[in-house]
Length: 513
Image (cartoon, rainbow, N blue to C red; front, side):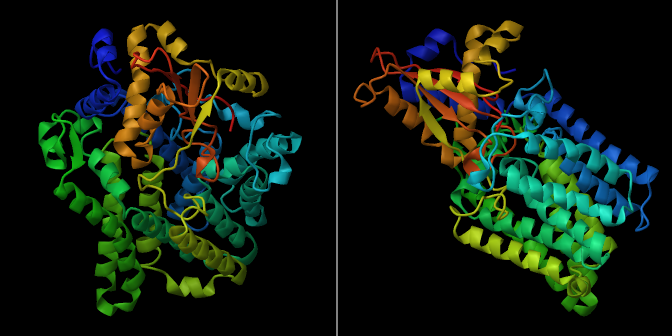
C-alpha cells in the first residue's frame, strides 16, 4: 500500500503547485501501484487462463491440429473473459478491486443499466433484447470452445460480436473489439467458405495492430510513457541509476526525459512498425526468406516479452501473451513470413471486410479525432483519451438516484473502514492516482490546472462545491472500455481563499457503462 509522502499537516501547508510537485516526485520514488504481490496475482491469473485454453484444446482436439486449436481457443476464450470483465485488464487487485473480484460483470445482464449503442436511436439503457443477447454469449462461446469443428455454427461468434457492436458499442470496445471484430469474421468465413484465407486474415489483424500502434507512438506522449516504464514498475522503483539515465533531475523537480530516453522511445516505436515489414517482405527475398521472417518475428515476440517482464502497473498480460502464440503460429509454423498465397485465396466477402478495416486504420491514423483510437489500432501508445466533467453536488445525487450501480459512494469510505490505511493515507491515495496519470499521460497535464482554476477565487462559478468527474477508461475514446472503470472524483473548494488544499476521492466506478 502507498504511505503518505509527508505528514498531513506539512502537506496541506504547502502551496497548491508544490503539493503536486511532491506527489509526482513521490511517484517516481516509490514506483507504480500496487506492490509486487498484486502484480504477480494478475500474471498468475493470466497464466491460468492460458492453461485453461491449452487444456480445452487438448481435451477437444481440432482436425486442423493442436496448435491451431490452442490459438482458436485462446482467442475465443479471451473474448469471453473480456466480455465478462474477467481477464483482469481493468479488474482485480491492480485496479483496486479485491472484493468482489469482478464487480462489473453483472451490469451487462441487468435491464436499465447504461450502454452506448452504435446508433443513437437505439437508446442508452439496456433493454430486454440487450439482456437476451448478452445472456446468450456465454453458452454460445462455451459450446464453441468444446466443439473445435463446429462447422456453420462457428458463425455464432461473429453474430454475437457484431450484434453487440450495433446494440452495445461500449461493450464492443470493452471486450477489445479491435481484435475480436475482424477475428470473429475470419472464423465466420471458415464456417461458410472453408479455411481459405484464415491464416492470412489472422496475420493481417496482427500486422494492423503492430504497425498502427507503432506509427501512433511517434509523438511526445510515447516518450513520456516509455520513460515512465523504466522508473515506475516495481522492479525499477527507487533506482537512482535508472532515474538519472531516463530523467534529467527528479530530485530537483525536473521530470523531463533525457535525450537518451527520447532516442530510445523513438527507436522502440520504429521497431514496432519496422518488425512487421520484415514479415511482409520476407516472401520476396528468396533464400533470405527464413532469415528475414525470423528477424521480424523475433522483434515482435521480444517486444511482447519485454512488456510482460517489465511487470507493468496495469494488467496487459493477456494482450501480450496471446500475440506471442498467435504470431509464432501464423508467421512461422503455418507460413514463413506473410502468407500471400492464402491472401489470394481469401473469399471475396472477407477480402472486402479487410479492405474496409485497412482503410479505416489509415483514415484513423490521419484524422485521429474521427475514429475510435482502438478501432484504428492507435492503442498501446500512451496516448489514451480521458474526459473530465465539472459536476455539482445536486447532479451527482441525481445520477446516483437514477443509475443502477454497484458502487459505494464515496469508495474511499470503504477503504477507511477496512483499516488497511489511516484516514489521511486513504485521502492521499487519490492524489497519488491523479499524479500517476499526470506522470505517464501528457493528455492529463491540464488536470491540476483545471482544478486550480475551479478553486480560484476569481472563478465565475459561484457554487461553493464542485466536482470533476473523470471517465477513466470509459466512453471518451468514442466507445467505452467496459463498465466505466477507473473513474476519479475530485472535490474542489472555492473558499476560503487561503485554503490551498483540495479533497479528492478515488472512485472505482460510478455507473454501469
